[in-house]
Image (tube, rainbow over all chains, first blue to last red; front, side):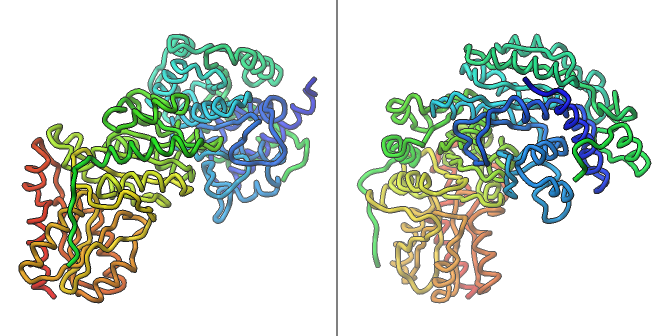
Length: 281
Length: 317
């Protein structure tokens, strides 16, 4: 059984990492990162079945692809705190000569990353390809992916969504971060997308809602439910209802912190709401 | 002067199909993807023999490029197949981020390149693809000249680790290179020795360059014909060695003069040995409907055009 206290402590520490990383370089994307912290912690601490070390092909282990690459702060923090690279390296985020580029990349050889992302809408196709390679290799492990909800406005997603069900890619769990915000405002203001459940179901996917996407226990329960639905002839979509900026009160429920760093005062306030648990990098 | 003949004409896309079929038999990691153009790309044989290693994507080229990138994760060597236009411009950002920047071992195989696609017209006749692809860091760009060279190139790129753009065409053209050739990426081939002018050609223009060299020989002009099948990485040395002897050069390609082989050659010459150069290429224009021969004549991409360019460049020596 997962130790919820330990996972919660890690989540709090990751929030601190995110705030400190973007503050240091006065750039980056805290809002979506904070909203997905519970998801990443659950994924890397409890859900992914991985081998020791890192190799690109990932045969015989679960794979994860981040499509909305701008939430790199949470990705980097959780990868580092899961042992993929030294936690101290978080100090180099977005600096010259760093492996921690503004958006994740394989180009600098950072362990844990298997595809570059940042230009939106491309990750689901990649995840499908990796899932089909697993089937060719008789590898029964799973492929997970994460996408922003606004990102679904990119047409390539719908090519991929149509394909995955037609080709019965049932070893894939694609999670949508349903925070209902994008750069220019709420998704309902910018380009309303209607019911994503109805759309994914119409395209032949199995859909699981996680209503409390910022509750560790709810995320674990929902993702395990999703995992149990794999291998049944359909790809699985998780609609992860989150609050952008979660855990820092003045960043919550707004698109304003999509790509903006906190000031010194705002950093102090954010950190005070998330007291140090495992030690700052 | 060494002369070249041919006994049959074949399309270079069939060379790709034959090479892919052979790879299907010899390399279990090779997989193929197609966006609803199996017949046009001549992928039937590979599919018939390896149905489990073929992915029909449907009319969704962006998704195809992403899936190809994903298939490399797990050790596969994906060959994507569609028209050159839909292999490059339509999916440039997918190739840029998911394949080139991510360093994925994807082979982007592009048929119906250039004007010789013919009657379908300008929407399908891409003349910008070499430029688009050679600008991507790490991308290898290859444009073979006949059936045999295309088949050999297809087989060779499976052995190379990294992204490759392989460009070929639709029309039947003379088969004049050996069936048993070994294809070396980045290595130019000297077809004729000459002393007055260097003609550097790629793709369908290589045969036209050989035809031109014959006519020039009869007119007392000695032309050295070099086949650059690999536009990137470019065989700088072969070009520099030749112009050191001839002192002038004509480049010939079925592509816009902006961004093509000619510009790559000009860069090398400007840096190392400034040399008079003329360009046989399209002049910043779209194509149009017509037969391949009519189009190549109208847009100045044949033996006659090469001969004219040679006479012009000789006066600039």
